[in-house]
Image (cartoon, rainbow, N blue to C red):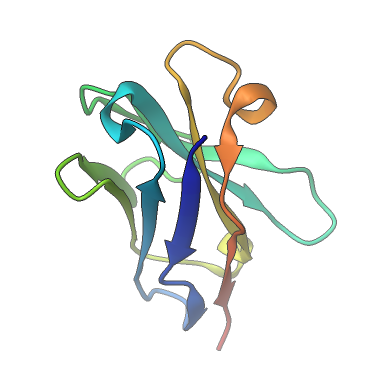
Length: 120
C-alpha cells in the first residue's frame, strides 16, 4: 500500500507558476514510477507527466517545455513545477504511484487530488 498526499494547488493568474508536491508513505517510494494526471471539468483524466524510478521524466505534449517533474527519493516526494500556466490548465491534479512499465491509471495508487485554477 502507498498513501499519497498532494499539496500546492490554488488560484493563479495566466502566465503564473505553481509547484505541486506529492508526498508518499507506506511503501518503498523509490521503486515506483510517479506521475501526475489532470482532469479538467467535463473532460477525461489525462497523463500530464511521469517520472521513472531512476528519475527520467516524460511529459505530455501540451506541457512540454513549461512543466518540470522531479523526485526526491530521500524525502519520498515528487514535485511538479508548472510555469506559464494558462486557463486550459485548470483541472484537478492527482498524483499516482505505480510499477514502471505498467498501466499507471489502472493499477496505480492515487492521491486525493489538488485543484489548480488559472484565471484572471
